[in-house]
Each structure stands twice: as structure tokens, then as C-alpha cells.
Length: 323
Ligand SMILES: NC(=O)c1ccc[n+]([C@@H]2O[C@H](COP(=O)([O-])OP(=O)(O)OC[C@H]3O[C@@H](n4cnc5c(N)ncnc54)[C@H](OP(=O)(O)O)[C@@H]3O)[C@@H](O)[C@H]2O)c1
Image: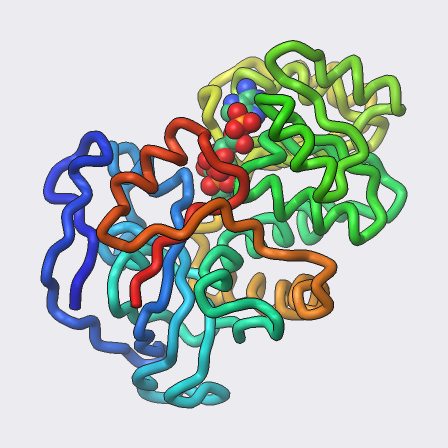
């Protein structure tokens, strides 16, 4: 098979199209002919040498893909050769073939193309598991998501809006503000010129915050929480270590969570995938929630795709077409 590998760590230029042996599906796994994969910010960190794949994962990047089932490993039930699917991966999506535990497969939702479906697994599983399963966002509650125009943000805004929350989203530019409002945010906050604490506190504070910045925003994220508010940190773009004012947190009976999807066990990922199938897939099939695809580039242009994401020149997902 062909894959984009990392012969060394560094800039986008290190991503190299390489011939590798085909993966063999183990017991409980399925081999996919990959149609498309998508770029995640974590892939940029992996490329730079800051995010090693978990033990047992392929060394080449790619946390999600869409494709066609080519072969069933021992004991796989419920899927047939030829099924069109998308999949949450622990790595290896930047390739023409990948083996994946069957529990991490999802059908391509009706009305979504096979290529677009590659943009769904990582954002749907991350947002659903954190905002709804972990933080238990309820209709009528105030939800603040940082990076509202990101892959994660565009899914979070749509899901929270369709499930009845009031959505606030931070963004880096007026053009991105327009996009997140069109996706369902009540108000976009320009993080370079506006204070999200002031804006959201004026609405009573945030019941749930989905944070991708980490240390740099910790104090202000606690400050913006409403009584009983839940802060979920999933990204550390602003660093990993900061001081937490427990006094401020306990006064409002708040909670802070920090989670990673990639390092979860296959059975934990399978549970999330089942919950996503029940909670998110119906909204995709009615068209109420859509994959937001900024652009589709061929796999061989993975370097260019990384440059776009690195410069935040995108809204939603950058997809790499494989087949
Ligand atoms: N823990 C997990 O399981 C998990 C899973 C998936 C993703 N993530 C994390 O989620 C984040 C988003 O991932 P992605 O792939 O969707 O990335 P992405 O599309 O590259 O988005 C990055 C976002 O960060 C925003 N941002 C940068 N600086 C900011 C600031 N000071 N304040 C507010 N927003 C800021 C950018 O906003 P502008 O473009 O508007 O400047 C952009 O929307 C990443 O940090 C990623 O590591 C975590």
C-alpha cells in the first residue's frame, strides 16, 4: 500500500509518500480500502515529534478515515466486504489501506458522501464524548467553545445548537465569526479583541466550556463558569501547566475535566462510537448537522494540507482524498 510516513520530524516537508506492506486485520479487526482521511491538529504535533502514537498504533499519521470494507478479521460480525464506512483510528489513516477494530466503524450517514464522511469520526466522537457524555450539556444551558471555526468547533457549535443549548464560540477573525453564527452560535467572540469572560458572564456564565487552549485560559475559563459549571479541556495549544484557583472553583461548585480520545482502549472507543451512532448520526441523516469541509486535497499533498491547518487558514476540516 501507499502511505504518508514520517522519515524524520519537522515541518510539512517531512511528510513522504512511501510504499509499505499492507496491514493484516487481526481478530476483531477489519481491513479498509481508504477513500479519504482528514487532518487533525494532533497530526501536526505528531509530525513535529511531540505526539508519539500509542503502543500498537501504526507509526504513520491519520486519526480517521472513510472507505470500503475489504476484508474481515476473525470473529467480526455485523459488517460485510463492500460496506462503505468511516472509522475512528488510533493512527495510520494517511494510507491506501488501514486495519481497524470493528467497534470503531460507523456507517456512512445517508446524504453524506464517502469523501466527506472522513471528516466526521474524530470530531463527532470528541465532541459527543466530552460535551454530552462527560459534561452532560442540557437544553437551555449556556455552552462556550473555544476555536469555534475549527474541526472540533464546527461540530460542537452545530450539535449544541441542535440539542437546544445557547452557543458562544471564540474565533480569530470576523470572517470566522460569520461562519460560526451561520452554524448556530448565538454570539461569536473575537478572542483577539474581545473578552470572552465579560461577554459570557453577561449571559449568566457558561454551564459548559469546551477548551482547546489549556494553561493560558485556565483561570479565565474558571472565571467564566456559571454555578455548577463544567470545564472540559481537550487541547493544550496554550500550554499544559497553570495554577488552578480551587477557591474560585468550589465557590461555584465547578468541575474541571481533561480528556484524550486517542489513548483510550478499543473498548472505550467502541462505547463512544455506539453513543455517537445513537446521538449524532440521526442529526447527520436529517441534514440538521453537516460535515464542514474546508477543502479536499489529494493524499500526496498532505504537506500542503498541514500548512493550511498550521496557519489556521481553514474553517472545519481539511480532507485528504486517497482513492
Ligand atoms: N483531547 C482530545 O481527545 C482531542 C481530540 C480532537 C481534537 N483535540 C484538540 O482540539 C483542538 C482542535 O482540533 P482541530 O483538529 O479541530 O484543530 P484546528 O481545526 O486546527 O483548530 C484549532 C483552533 O484553535 C483556535 N485557537 C487558536 N488560538 C486560540 C485562542 N487563543 N483562543 C481561542 N481559540 C484559539 C483556532 O482559532 P482561529 O482559527 O479562529 O484562530 C482554531 O479554531 C486541538 O487543540 C486538538 O488538539 C483534542
